[in-house]
Image (cartoon, rainbow, N blue to C red):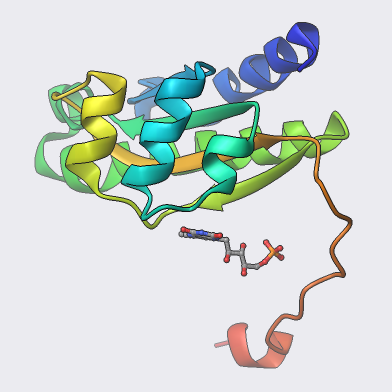
Length: 150
Ligand SMILES: Cc1cc2nc3c(=O)[nH]c(=O)nc-3n(C[C@H](O)[C@H](O)[C@H](O)COP(=O)(O)O)c2cc1C
């Protein structure tokens, strides 16, 4: 993968909004085949996680957010910070012509072990690369089902 494109994606990640601008998250860039394989296993043997040339693993940093926001920071804001950062990665990667898969089904302790991080909480794995296929657009619920004016 083009290093400059990855750097632009990571820069965009760093521009994501976060509670109190604390950026209470950490991103691990997983490139080694052994670690990608271990991640795929941690994600219930989802093989594409190992096939992708890179995986970005987003962790929430509850302690960091708690320094300013206490329990709400630890349980909510840190998770939101990490999630928004991952969303920015997805959008920036798409802008680079790359494909992503958001992976939320994984064993947290196994992902912690792969990233050697016991302090933070893994929130999402973003498999990143050039798509092997060009899937059809997926459906969505009607707007009226998900949006309500009150
Ligand atoms: C919280 C979350 C968890 C997800 N976990 C997985 C996963 O473990 N494996 C997978 O293949 N896709 C996963 N996805 C991707 C969704 O299945 C996918 O976004 C959805 O089916 C809509 O398809 P689209 O994104 O291609 O439009 C996840 C998405 C989200 C937001």
